[in-house]
Image 1: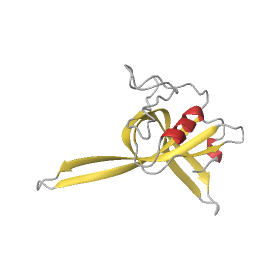
Image 2: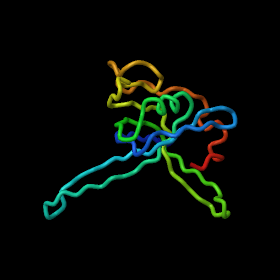
Image 3: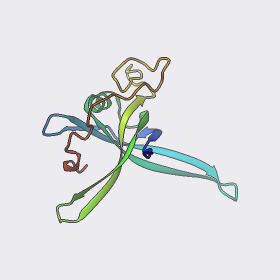
Image 4: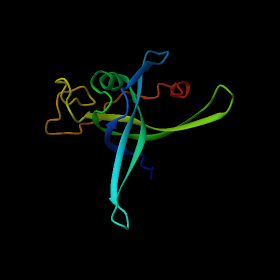
Length: 148
């Protein structure tokens, strides 16, 4: 039986999405999302922890995120964990773990944008999470060449 690699997050963008294009013309975007949890410690004091997650989006989904998302906006992200390695300018091996998103839901509206589905459809409707789009190989064979 194969393993399961699935991540679901709801959080706020830490900065505007940045979109670049691979040499083959495929759009690839990235942005950080913050998720927070709070609890009361043994002495009853409220504690809070924020985790930052690196999100990568491909193709039309990257373009939609760039168009409709911005710093501070709340989003639902569904995807898979991926760790990449590359050599930095000094020849040191570097690693990053990121979430390759297959679905992004825009949970709050800004400037009348409304909620967009990952497939580019209308609002959230009866199926709030929709089906992930099929962009074929989301890495386009070149994700290791883009160390951001």
